[in-house]
Image 1 (cartoon, rainbow, N blue to C red):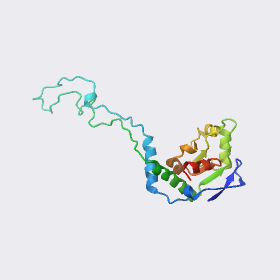
Image 2: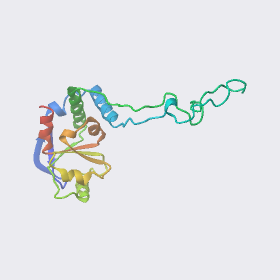
Image 3: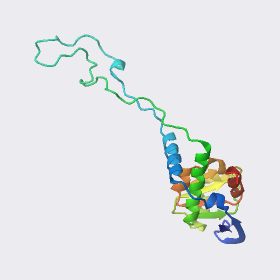
Image 4: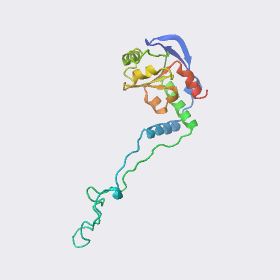
Length: 209
């Protein structure tokens, strides 16, 4: 697939880039995508939920009323789960939700996600940008020039473009990531994928083309 390279004014330049078929035009694996997205979402969970069970409640252990003759059910402790303030039965405990996926499957999922975006014509290539200092207003101007200011956008840059990242981090609909931080969920969640010209070679190297 051949795409034009855009400049920061949002105009197509005379340069063209070729997106290799082994990354942007494979037979996508929906199941691999599902598993990788599931792993990403699982890793976002803290898993710190916790309720106190009967043995963890602080309170008296004396028998609160006599066993027989009260006309009500017998009760041996104020920490009984049936009472207000008592322990919870089978309450939530801290849990690690992550699970393991092998590298080949995760790579297949990311390449499948890139293929989906290429198939939908939702990939743009931008000349390498690096602001002299972090400036959100400058980044917003770039988005408006590219006509993506109202869309969820994922910028993929090289590691050197730190000021671009700093200029965008307080924008809700835009995220800037380096090539090594690419993940399936964010690729699919973005309406438009914008690749810095220099990032394409790194993507090819990352996926061993």
